[in-house]
Length: 362
Image 1 (tube, one colour):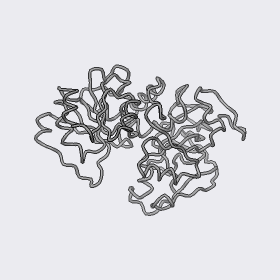
Image 2 (cartoon, helix red, strand yellow):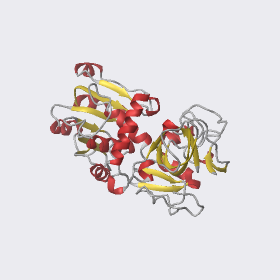
Image 3 (spheres, rainbow, N blue to C red):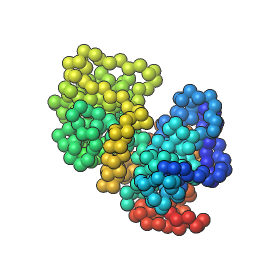
Image 4 (cartoon, one colour):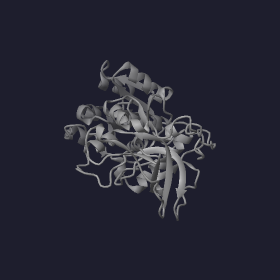
């Protein structure tokens, strides 16, 4: 099989395409033939050295998210069967086996059914962005632990950076759950993407007074803020937040320190929730996976230009270019077609099997 690996941290040039044996499955494990791999900022940051590891032995295969078809299962696997269409999460977290390869073997808990009618593109886009967004939207005290239709009715959510992958998923999930969604963007083009994602109010903070506009829209204050840039936004966040509201932060930026307006936060009894999806509790992760799968089945987590998240595609051998696209700030979703398009990988949106030229069922 083909796999992308790196043995040392560095620029995208450290990524290499190699041939490997197809890995066996052990007890409780599932082998998936990857159709599409999703690329996230964490992938290039890990490759660049954020983990503080000088040498990877065995070499690291990048890619946390992906979608494909179950190829083999080990003893004790109950979650899926050979031939099932699945989406994957956290594939390369604390293990060397990411989704930038023809096959990956993972513990069954990381392998989730891809609902009928949901494409591999959507499946490969769910993991980090949607699971992070779900945790942000459920961090409020007294709020739902698992999103579902109507669970956020009466709540107002402010999503900072609605054109980003996590912001996009937060808009979609919040709207699916019944919240009123306000989002911020920095350009007219990004505003168009946020509208397509389902936001009810879009604020271009370069052209409007953010605080005044939010207070005009939501005089009582917003209930939850999904925050990507606390270094720039925290003071404004506290000002527009309702008493008892939550600011859910999933990026701190560089420098890492964040100044918290303490007295204003005390006055409003603000809750701060920092989020790293990998280390959320098993209960939180289970709730997120279930809700995200349900939202995808309902068609609420679409990707592509029409859904507000443009896609740029690369072949497996172009993984370095895919990393550069994310590192360079591409607005949208970067996907890697591990199996060439037209080999049946895109024909499974309706859940039906297609025979690929090499004889494998897709």
